[in-house]
Image (cartoon, rainbow, N blue to C red):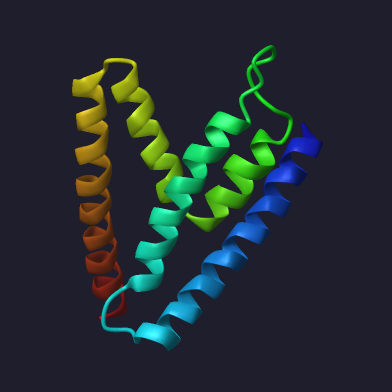
Length: 127
């Protein structure tokens, strides 16, 4: 278990660093008027998550030993949106259209509401 946690931690450091560098490069290239960097990591991360999901499935054991490092670590550190995208796809592929739709709408809608609530609470505490 500790080895898996270390894999995830190392992968997360790599992914988060990549996200930071992508955001910084996008800000220099395109300015800060639109979140190009965030959009880029979400789209690229989701694409890479799709590729990795297929390539890291072992036909016999089910999952490659590199799965935690790549999927949770690197890609999770790069963008959690990729994991969210995969979860939605899995639900839809399993025919759970209502569950997938609720998860999709709930994740986006509730996350935005939670962000607004956090901002309101913090502003209330700070004054």
